[in-house]
Image (cartoon, rainbow, N blue to C red; front, side):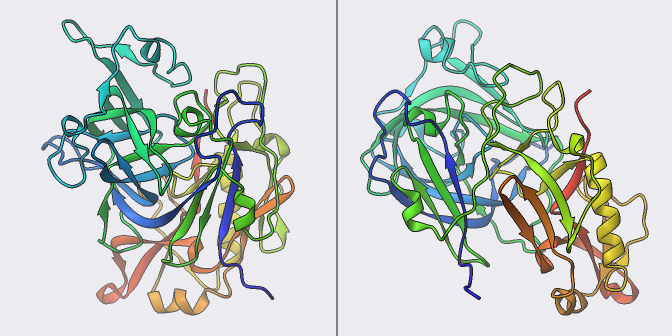
Length: 399
């Protein structure tokens, strides 16, 4: 059997009829790292430091002269941003760049370019003439700063101008978790927004397609922007992107949305109604590809079916935690207790979980299905670690 070296996702950011010249027509190849990346500056006493946990990061140079920064690759976000309020290596020094320019509040960039953002850019209170941006994320983290422009250098390609958020505060109301029990982390300077919104990096550079490939283990992956990403990838299965022409209140039209057809545990396809897996009349319930999210989230009905079947299949291998009130990071409640050696020995016997898409499938097996909760031990002398099924967790639909 041939060995799969990379998991590659090839995304069509824009149609071939997109206007303007593609900035990365020849293609740019960048190393893609999987790491625990902290994204917040030092928080005040009443704020918790936000831990972005395990992320896909890429090295970029910004400004003149170029400053090397590390950015989280996020296909679920639009506006790229950099931390600008620190003095350490993890902050972008905006005043040191001769090509940096803050966007004025009455400029077209501030007035209409941010139309796809949930909160559109707005003018700061007088006497300031800056264009403010305020971003929020599903994990309750938030970022605030000004809209700015500077040059970005990716690999050996010529510098390209792009708008981004120069962020002065970035905090979370919930704090962070861990990274599979390891305390190693590397500070990231910001986030590279790659969805299909008008202010995303791929839209601004007229990038029609890109691919990111994730290597197994700790090896580096690959980010390919522009060019022919297919030439570098193994044979791929395709699933179409879903688009809904009419505006719906809870459908994110600039996300990379796909159709989830079913969920299987082992060879068994779970009896989940199709209506649970498709967007409803409000647009709620879409399935999107989001490289900025470590875990997979399901609506409550689909999650309940998966949770029950996984617990049933692993009854002889994993002991349930047996603590109804235990919920890791406020979301993960399918948890078990077992020594690390037992989990390692049982990894070949854990059932494979597959997300069945239209024309393709994403399957996860073995220890990758379980996340060891940092700092939680059970049993005599703390012999047992706490593990949670964290490739999935429940979310409630919009009201």
